[in-house]
Image (cartoon, rainbow, N blue to C red; front, side):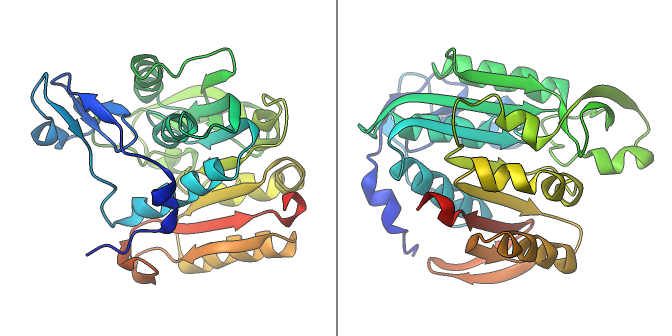
Length: 280
């Protein structure tokens, strides 16, 4: 039995009519099952009308809580950045949630993804869910400590592999050169401070977040960092935000069964959610 976070009570489940090729979240956002190996068995039959359930309790439940909290607090323009976006999972979910917040009158999003197939899927995902707008920027590139160009592994099975990283290039049999964006550069696409920044860049966070910490502290209200490599690295990320004056909202170390307010959760990647008191 999941003890759902109170934030879910602020949003209604949306009825959808299944297209026969997608799975759906409770906000009504549809994701093509071919984006993720093994998802085809969860596709409801075409034409079926239903309301999807709230998320199950796993490590991604924590992302949901952080995303929805950022939308709930928003007023005027909601702005989100997603680094290592895959098909744009969390930026799309956030914009879907914004449809239910009457205080949000406009949205802006910047999502960056280095793998070309995942980036193409992201464009498809936003288009099919009617999320593309003049304020939405879907960038093909990687996050780097410096701007310019950077090598990234070629992914042979994009529906299976969402763990490629600029840090794993040396071991990759094939690689490609993509544009490198610093976090500071990405934030400049927005007209104001980001309500939420979601970072899942498979170990590159330890090079890129410190390099742009000043910009994040100036221009971001809340940040989620998926942490990798080791518990020591995870703790260093927590200390980095604390030293910059941020408040830690979630701190769950990688590779552990963590006790959460919702029940025990087996965490693969670690989760650090930090909130910026500057914007309280």
